[in-house]
Amino acid sequence: MIGWLIIGCEVAFWVFVLAGLSTRYLLKNKKLGGLLLLGTPIADLVLLAATAIDLKQGAEATVYHGIAAIYLGATIAFGHSMIMWADQQFAYRFAGGQKPKKKAKGGKEHARLERQGWYKHLLAWSIGSFILAVMIIWIGDRSRTAIFELFIIRWGLVLGIDFLISFSYTLWPRKERS
Image 1 (cartoon, rainbow, N blue to C red):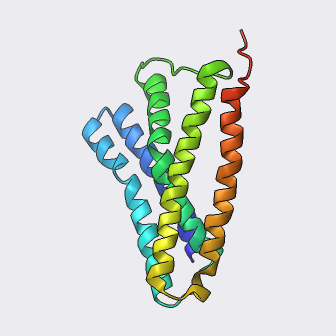
Image 2: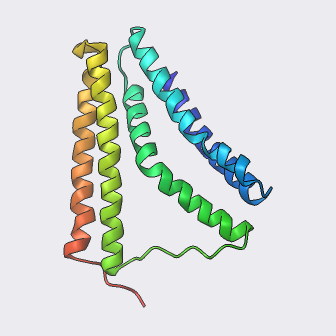
């Protein structure tokens, strides 16, 4: 059930984003558009509550419960920038806004963007790992939540690999294309 809820929350996130931006730019109603955009964190809170309730009622922690924590961390860390990107695209296409700048594909600017992406990944890992740790403590039965420790460790390894790749561009920047 939690697996389907994760999918539902991801869909709800993008439905709220598209509804908010459509209302803002197509219907020219900024207040209602803003309210719809505020719905995006509601999907996260629903997922967090459902995960906690499921575990507290005795469910064995599964991969899906771990993915829920990852999803929450990633949504909090990357959600604002994803919404800002979508907002720029909508403003350009439907409201005569400025054409969004393309991301740098080389040089110091690309290296800076890669580092910023890693910092967001670190934030996502920190939030997700905190949620997993709180669930481990809250459930109080390490045999039921052992998978959460694996999630923290494995995600930490992915974070380390991402660090090496992201910061390598600082030492060895890509050449800028003209």
